[in-house]
Image (cartoon, rainbow, N blue to C red; front, side):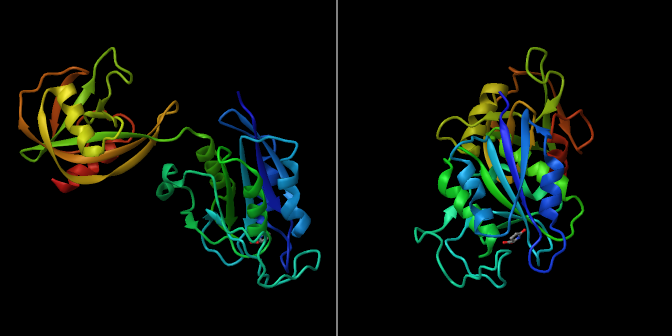
Length: 308
Ligand code: PCA
């Protein structure tokens, strides 16, 4: 069942007359993402503000927590993965507190609870950067306090937004979507190459995604890597014995009910005659546009074509 997601922004501070994080957070209040409802809260830029959420969590539960703040000198949005056990202000906060080079708890830095490897960061809105330095001001203090009270199961991250970006709201929504979606399932996808052509296989009638073309392969089994998975899957699906070659790349794709991380690897036939088990047709492709590809497979076909 859908729960609540807490999104916080900050009031303006220093000599700023507005704070993008306040605008974005306020605009998201009541929005639904993946069946969850956003509750937004604007925090004061002082010690109370930095503690507001960690206190709130004594009585309330959230499916995910997203703190947003302004990163004065950033050019791109930053996804903060670490709250440092450090306060070292360069200006006073909005209550006049001016802290220099002090720890927050003395217990060390705290890590964000998101799985960034599942986010497909390179294809996200506004080219975010991954950062392990949330600064040493109120944003860092807020993240630090929240991470100190939540469990590892609650995704929590800090988004540091530049003063100007194309789509701060869209970027934030995309991050929340990433936090709420299921973990990636690792899947091997074989680029079976022969005579400068690569093999596409059509999923047969009774299979999920019937009628769409794909690269043979499947989910990693316990303890397998991409190569072992592909050698096994290609034998099960096509009765071909293959050896693996170079890795072509990884693609993360959200099918809605499941998010997959495709590990695409070159495969070369060692022996066997093709016999189909989960497909009803094969096609040897010379380029990316010869069949109706499933999900990200067209883009993968382009990458393979470029290597032929
Ligand atoms: N940015 C400041 C505090 C509030 C905000 O929006 C920071 O980066 O710490």
